[in-house]
Amino acid sequence: MSRDNGGRWRLIRRVIAAVATLFAGALLAIACGKKGDKVGASAEPEQAGSVRPIHDATFVGSASCASCHAEEAAEWHGSDHDLAMQPADAETVLGDFDDVTFTHFGIESKFWKKGDAFFVTTPNGDGVPTDYKIDYTFGHYPLQQYLNFPRGVTRL
Image (tube, rainbow, N blue to C red; front, top):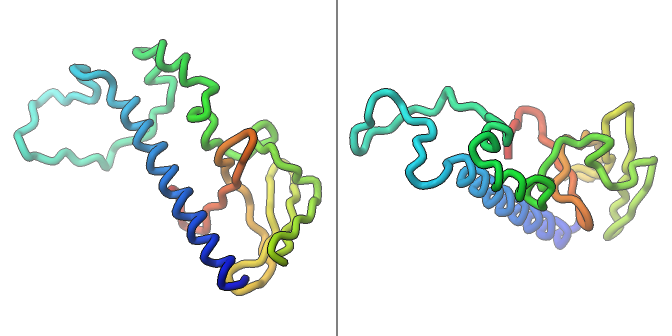
C-alpha cells in the first residue's frame, strides 16, 4: 500500500468514525424521549452529582421506542438513518459479490460470497492478500461501504 493511499484510508476511517458518532448521538436523542419523559427513571431519586452504573444497559431496538413515539418512528422507518448501518445479508448488500475483481490505485480486491456470507479479499497493511468477512453495510443507495470487525472488536 503506498504512503498516499495509507493517508487516504486514515481519512476514510476518521470520516466513518465521525458519522458513526453522529448516528449514535441521534439514536441516543431518540431513545431519551421528550423533555419531561421519565425514561429509565429509578425508584430512588438520584443525588446531585451521583453516577449511576450502566453496566446492565442493553440495546432495546427501535420497536421499544415506537410504542411511545409512533409518529417519529414512522418518519424514521426507511429513512437514510434507519438504513445507515445494517447486518450484511442478501437484502442489505447492494454491491456485486459474484467473484468480481476491482483494481484501484494498483490494489486489486476481489468481492465474493461463501454461502450466505460476503467477503472481500484485499491486501492487509503488510500487502498480503487477506480475506475479510463483511459484517455490516454502512449506507445504502447510491453509496454503500462494508464493515469488518477485526477479531475481538465488537463495536465501533
